[in-house]
Length: 249
Image (cartoon, rainbow, N blue to C red; front, side, top):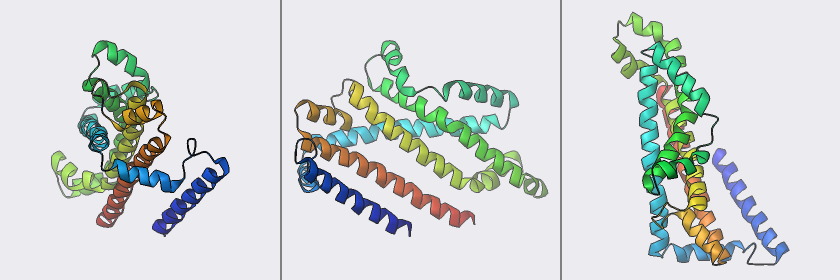
């Protein structure tokens, strides 16, 4: 049923897009879907365009992996020491409301114009926004299964590996999904505003170049790629969530 709804929504958006292009009657402002899809097909045979896509995905994968690793490590330590937990929650209450994008000018001055700056800003945004969610998920899992672990006389490590973490598998995948979605939006915003920090690559950089050269059809094609990649990854995480629910159940 959900797949059917997504197909209906996709078709509806294409129809609305096509009607808007007819109403505006200006291919520069709103190119029709057929011209945009043809431009996308042509760009997919362009090595520079493919390189830009892969560069953006690579930067995000690195930042996402670092964020998830830090989240899992701090969640583990927060449940061992109350002092560490209070410190982490205090830091989270300070940094969670702060837009990671606002740190970019400071990072550029401190670290310099390089990929490390982009990675640090992405990690900061994805890390603090999802750390508290993961801590709460582990608290819920421990509250539910704590007595079962005592009855089975499991050690702390065995409780985590055999009970707590498998029980919160759905929450872990959901946090991975939210972290990726947040990082994808932040990455494109950084690339469009600041460029890819000296590398000259990145999907956002390509969109800026298309805007500068008034190549609106390729700009819309790049935007379509952003939507397709983002939606595809989220659908993959949704599939993993459904599989995890069946396993846990």
